[in-house]
Image (cartoon, rainbow, N blue to C red):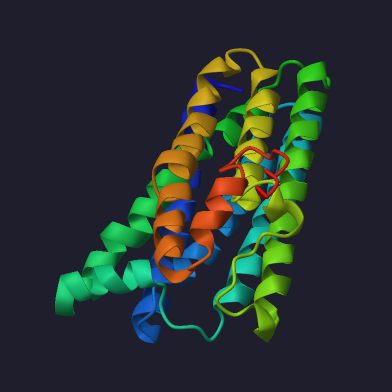
Length: 266
């Protein structure tokens, strides 16, 4: 892989996700609902991995592995979020931005929502591109296997957690109640924990390639977002006001990393 290719392919990917988000923005303007950007998030990583696979000349086995793992994760996430948000009102986060921006939100959203997420997506995806574009080692290593295993555990936590929560919400008897069953009895955010593991798994695969250490920035950024920014803090702030029993749930359930729930004091 030449230096020109190391630069050209990531730039192609930046243009690709930018174009995808621009199309999504046009659709959001017509529908007056920017929540579609949530579905485009996972899909964008699949496009990046696809471009890197088809245009790169790295070790084919590792490049295909990353493409398959990314496609399984990204397509599932995009499909789940599309199904969850279909026919619903605009997410309250974007609704607040729309209210603050007034009549100009239609153009503000292009920069503040869609292109910003395109840039963020591309930056995080550098760990995928590094793994796919490296020709060496031209074989699978222990780090590839460990990374895939970590990814697998994360995928189970994220997908099963989402499925359990969707089933819980679908039952009218659970309206207003706190989900504290299944994986949610061991962690208040098992889906976020799964996302956390998925990106650390990708990093381990990239670490198998020469000079892959710097890609640790991708899982670190994801971890910070989940633990300190829009993940756990934002979700919990909303649930504390909407779920009367959430304070009790906090007392007995681990915040993020799975741990046996505390027994009720008697």
